[in-house]
Image 1 (cartoon, rainbow, N blue to C red):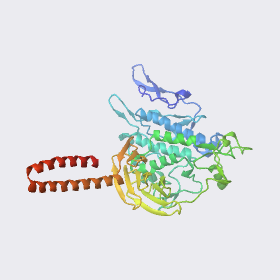
Image 2 (cartoon, one colour; image 1 turned 45 degrees about the vertical axis):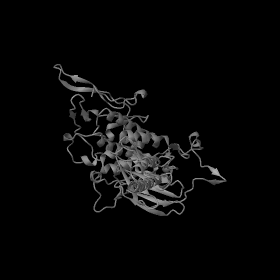
Image 3 (tube, rainbow, N blue to C red; image 1 turned 90 degrees about the horizontal axis):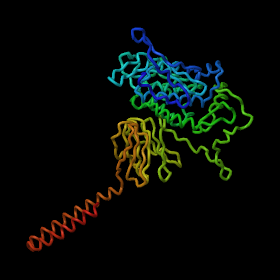
Image 4 (cartoon, one colour; image 1 turned 30 degrees about the vertical axis):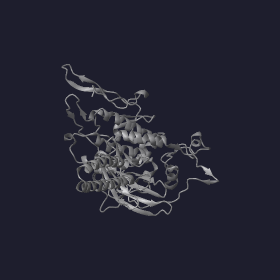
Length: 491
């Protein structure tokens, strides 16, 4: 570890992101008896930061922007550690300290799983913490398991969830299944969280809802706890969290009523004011503003045209049984397609709000949908690693495109509709030639050319029989000329 230290992501801020071993301590005989690590000063344990009661007792001035920035910085530090080939293993709030600049420091690095790059020998992480252990490792002997960063991805998601949702865990709510509420580890083992497809765990009144955060962060949670439960490789990487949280932090705006309230522009209103009014408890108490600040003035305001506010709710479309990941309008704007984690695609009549049809065929969540330029074909990308093409009018499956080794979060048609692009979690983009009406016309043209060639050949045989060899030789020359023309026009 001393010889292969990860890159310090916050070096430019003069900050220590991880208490890394600096040197070895040896006795008079040269035997290793210990090591020196940097001391992390003026840091509070992570639970003191995200838990409202402990935050209040310690009189810490922390708002939602501070918490999201902390989550972003934790993800960037863990990304740097993973890039260097280490697995943290025991990720828990007690092992993360945070200063007053929202800069975290990870301690207890001597429990990391370490791979010696010279001989590939692995020194395992023998410890783990309940409530943060991924389902596939519950009740396993850590001292006999070679872990990967995929296991850290689960632990990181739980930490980020607690930071963003006031210390709440994704595995706490109202149990509506049979029997007593299972222990947290059992809920994790069965993939039962607040937004699982089976909905056996329901939010309660004090539950902070998933929809208040940026859509990209929502997708990361759904990928980790839903898609990632079935396939651990689908869990977002630390780098994925960095990208999503950076977008989220940039979309935060300050409330016009309280200086301690931040909310996401994508949500559109201050959830914390609504929650405080409803429950009588404000987890981000601050001062009521006497007048709007400069920050509030920079918030985009609704456009007014002819004195009518643009942005009214037109209608709500319901029908999916789980989260909706993607939507797309048809080129004429009359049809809306929606892809969901219930593994289906639904087509809606935009004007009437009616469900036109449900497309089924994917075996996992549908993350992306796109209409062809003519509106006749719909492409969909899924966590089942496939892309499917659908006939919009008939609702039939036209074709399944396979080749990606991970989920497909985006698809797009070229302007001429002849090429489909797909982006995947396998870090590749693939271009596909897709069938169109023109290709059908070409096929018919080829069939006609073949019929013409057969007719000409039969005519040649007749000429040979009736008029002899010389006439047949002339016919052959004409036949070859016609054949060349047929080939040219068939291209």
